[in-house]
Image (cartoon, rainbow, N blue to C red; front, side, top):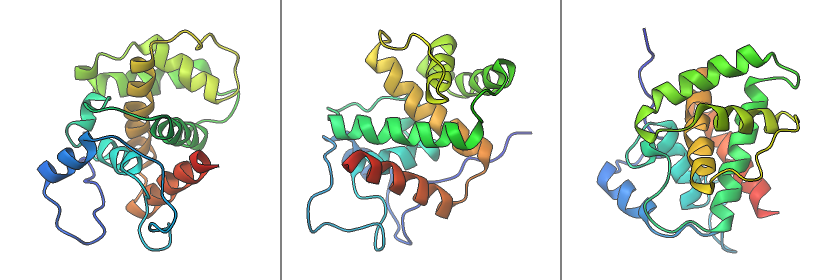
Length: 177
């Protein structure tokens, strides 16, 4: 039996899902000086909000890639969050069969995104330090894997809202340096 999908945290405020989609459809930018910090409102940017929407299986994030433009900062946030989740789920040197099962479940759960399982598996293995040929992957596939496999790993790890907030905040902190 599958677990119910977690809704994105909205910090105690009622937020209309259509509003989330509109706000996340625009460009994603790095944090500005003087904006909120992790102490008062994680995450800092739309990139983090989009990650949380993907983890909560919110549209349009359930298809992997945002409809609007994405800047380098957002790509770094998503890559960092993916790496953090992968390293939380797997140890370096994890059996390939274990990685394959998790990736297959993630690809199946996000079937509408049509992610190539072999590419997703290679990105997971690369995050674990294995030398695999990921340099020539389609950037759209990379973004989809980073977002949707991240969402599946968050679900598999059964991260609570606080843990998800901490992971996204750490990904944004790493992307800002």
